[in-house]
Length: 191
Image (cartoon, rainbow, N blue to C red; front, side, top):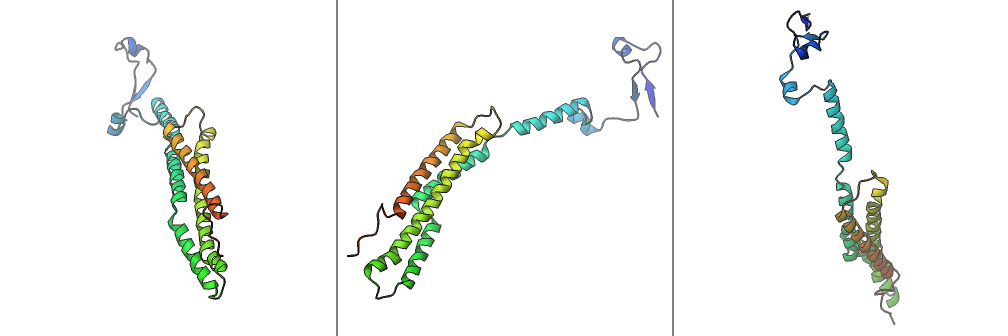
């Protein structure tokens, strides 16, 4: 098998004397990859190395998801305030439906409500949905550290952006409700 014992007569020094009964396998040699990379995976040192890498990955959360959520919250809030493509298309569709369903001999008040009022409320409804999404995502990002790893504080910029998303969401939701109920910029009287 090609093994030899270290306990050979007369050739032992101080450190070699401690390894009297160790056997060394002379047929195996370390592969170049193992020699260059350090201890093999099966050794005690290699196990510690691999275990250390796993803990670094689990503790190395950078908050990218939370930061992205905060930015999305602000973006949705801005869309709720300025209007988006979906709200514009929905309002145009509601205007077309109002024109098709309103007869030409209908009163002015009926025509205003069917053609313009419903489209205005549809725009307000979509703005409110975007504002609500911004508000919910911002609150989730702010509440996330309470359910995460203890002792891992949230980055200050993530908190700031999430609070901005919540604030813009609240403002957008308030404006959407005011537009939908005609409390803000309602239809003019037809008489």
